[in-house]
Amino acid sequence: MWKRFIFKNELDEKLSPIVKDSWIRSKKWRVNPFQPYGQVKKIDLERYKTLIDWSVPLMEGLYSIVKGSGFLVMLCNEKGQLLKSIGDPDTQSMANQIAFVEGADWSEQVIGTNAIGTSIVINQPVQIFAYEHYSQICQSWTCSAAPIHDSKGSIIGVLNVSGPYEKVHPHTLGMVVSAVKAIEYQIKLNENAEKNMMMQRFLEATTNNMKESILIIDTEGKIIKANDQLKKFISLQQSCLEGKNIRELFSNKSIVSNKPVYLQNREMHLKVELSGTTHHVLVDKTPIYKDKQWIGSMIILKEIKTVRQFVNRLSGNQAKITFADIIGQHPRFMQKINEAKLAAATDSNVLILGESGTGKEMFAQAIHNESNRKHKPFIAINCAGIPRDLLGSELFGYVDGAFTGAKKGGSAGKFELADGGTLFLDEIGEMSLEMQALLLRVIQEKEVMRIGGHKVIPVDVRIIAATNKNLRDEVEKGSFREDLFFRLNVMPITLTPLRERKEDIPLLVHHFIDKLSKKLNKPFPEIRPDFFEALIQYDWPGNIRELQNILERTLNRHTQSVLSAKDLPEEVFQMFSGSKKMEMFVHRDDIKKQSIVQALHLFNGNITKAARYLGISRSTFYRQMKKFKIPY
Image (cartoon, rainbow, N blue to C red; front, side, top):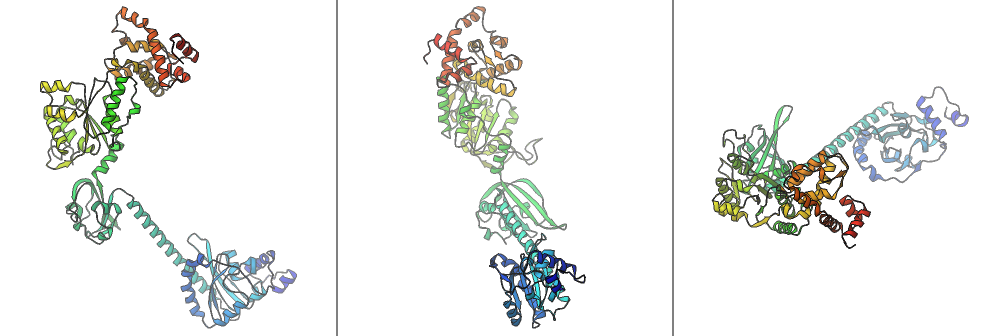
């Protein structure tokens, strides 16, 4: 049958379909059926070390069954190259004669039909008898081979048993298939072990990168695992932890309990027995179950400081205003900015004085953001906006059961929440004498005691207080403690009212209208000079807050693309008599000149930007400069 196919290209019907198809492929690939030996290619065995290591024990077991009968047990890679051969010495010598050695290529494309190469092509076990081999050099052998697959089903190698054609048994292929299944099972086990190891390393890396301290214990309290953060938390090496009992670390009953206790965000002062240190923490303890049986617990410790910093960021307890956000160029105003920046460079308490609406909280936020506490909380509280009987619990916090309606578990006060940062006490002049005494103690001792509690809590807080009252007068009246006044009045800053820096009004108007236009989705309007004139003549008892209010009201009602004095609410003009109104417009030229000079100064002489800022054309701007003899 072989000769008829080779010489006459005739296929016998009795030939098995697998061999028939393989012979056709072999001829198509122009394999030389009379080649004297196989081809040997260089191979990187190190790349296949794992496959070899997994396969060799099973190859040796397989060889022990056929030992002494002239058989070879061989392992090839996914391309059909020989990796490893185990067999009788005489048989090995016969194999060497046809280059059946390490690196030999037994793919169908090179050697034609053979068990190794054909099993790769058809991806199934196959046995090739004697003259079924396409190349003549193989026809004294019968070979049984099966492909080896990884867990994804890809061929990663071939296991083959070759021997004298007259000694082969049909069960040989069954033994090869069984050995391959054992190898594949071993591969799966190793892959699972690697996945488990990778997952374990991933979990370790994850827990070690967490800011919380994590501890896993068994039902007896024995420590199974602790992350790096816990080592830092208790100042001990992990090697000193694993295997110890949790009772050697902590004494708190709910932590060391040998029952499946569940805790969530339980606040505790936790003492570490080995180091003697005490930590203020939130504790989570979660029982771990397997098949509904309790096998241990996971404990997570979160330091209160870290938790509060995170909560402060989420809840907006951060200063948003910087000095760059505070608008003004008047010399007296710039002097106040410089005073505030000097205050920011210190850690001293600051007292900001000024009329309502002058921007006291903006200055407080800017001072905080310029200080070395800028990454810590900024907590603001209005002392006049909270009932006197509640202000204490707001500032100092309270313990569980301190009073009727107290939240279960108690609550931290503003001093605790601001720890490390800044506490802004607005309207400090409205605080009762009783509360002033408590505040003075916290400032002096740098510690706070919750209402109804007995535990002293250290706090590091910088105070910025603000008031529209004259505190010296209040001290004289006896309504404000003198000692508290001196504690707060370390870095005093008195803000200038808007009526004393009216030159800044055009700057403020453009700033607020720009923000409001974007907020209301309106184009920035052209602003006529008489609009500025009217605003500059008004005395602004409500200061910047009132200016912002009037501008928002005006823009909400405004439907045209130009803003002029007639668009302003009547209250801006009510304080003037008829003659005063006339006088206001007599001095219009002075105001125009002042606006042009300010715009040029603001944009460093850039006429295009200055004209756009004032809402007039460049040609009009040039005419005004010429009219008022303003140098280019």
